[in-house]
Amino acid sequence: MNQASFRRFDESHLEEWHLIDARFRDYQADAPRRVLEHLQRLAGDHHGYPVDRYEHCLQTATRALRDGADEEMVVCALLHDIGDDLAPANHAEIAAGILEPFIDPLNAWMIRHHELFQGYHYRHYFGQDRHAREQFRDHPAYERTVYFCDHWDQVSFDPDYDTLPLKHFVPMVERVLGRPPFGGLPDPIKENTQ
Ligand SMILES: [Fe+2]
Image (cartoon, rainbow, N blue to C red; front, side, top):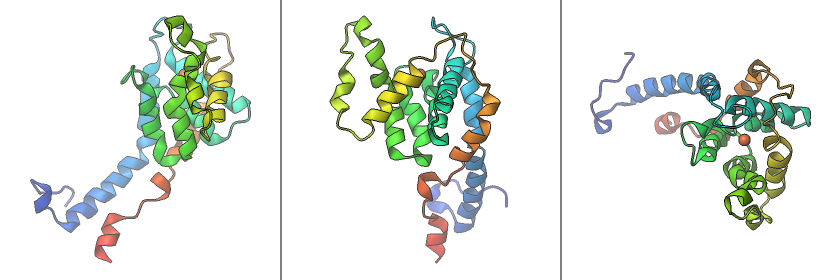
């Protein structure tokens, strides 16, 4: 059997779920390759910015790396805008969703809120409150999110910056996204058969 034969879940069998679970693990293990493939879709269209989103992501990660950030943070920097093409109005949620199972919850919070924090540098040009991020001043991830935006993200639109190529970051992405999701979920199949 290499494929389940059920037509509906309530007619499925344990052996079929063993098969599906094994396939899912292979699929999950290949996720870093697909994520990086998607990141490269951001190349080309600059939307009026001085650099395209792909260059911006690489540059943000390069700056984080050179500033001494740990590997998880560098990967956050690399992927923080990966949702720009699929969800331009809600892009931070996409990156947060991809990374959340594998990283510190405070880093996931940082990614999820980076757009608002980044807005400190441009919201006033749109008649909005640039200090909106201050509502989170007491949050434990406030300082790191401010630092992420002010020192790595908002400054990474420089076409003349010595940005590292993607291949430099590939092993880091593979290691971080290769961690057990959510620190290792209980295995539902094993639980069922014990
Ligand atoms: Fe960004």
